[in-house]
Picture 1 (cartoon, rainbow, N blue to C red):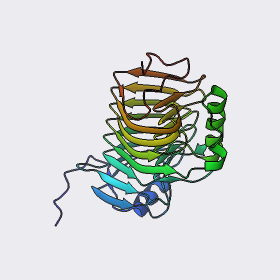
Picture 2 (cartoon, rainbow, N blue to C red):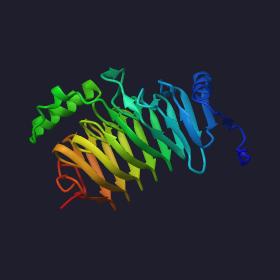
Picture 3 (cartoon, rainbow, N blue to C red):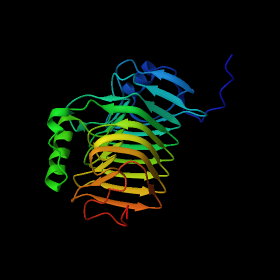
Length: 273
């Protein structure tokens, strides 16, 4: 028999299946705190959805609970507020096109007004289905990049791991991003405010950048590492469009095309030589 779980905090609800998670979240009004026992939880073709007005925490322990979308849907969609603690999000696939302000985000998509916080988590093996023909016109100049980003946002082909809409905010702490792919922003695409602190990105395949910051997006990268990045056509690790801003401190960018990363006038200090 499985060992007994440690005592939970008062008010924490134990949920053991994706159906239970969805049922509790669907009726939640305000804060809700859910404990997911370690192990795999198959989502069955529908993502975990946190609607506007809901403030949810999904927590696990040890090796963490694994939310497995099985390549049939995103793992999580956030319109309200969500905190993930010791949770694995894997095998997500973003649907094509836009769904309101949701676009892209193979594993996790955060809509306008949504708030995401992840601590001691993992995001892996997630993607968008590449719209090859519209994006073949990517060129290395700014106009080509702007066109590619616009097409990617319209078709949902950005943010293999995570995408943030323009008024979304997210903070990832001590979180691993691995084996992610999308034409633009293989791992992350943000038009909102994103902080990555002690994040390890290892393994991302894109046509244009592992992390894409566009629109008026804001990226803060602290004490993090980006490695094994492969950008087929341009840039490499980090793309910062002219109206966006990125601040990189105490972070390393190595391997793949990552040395070809300086782009946009608002990166301080510069992320590469």
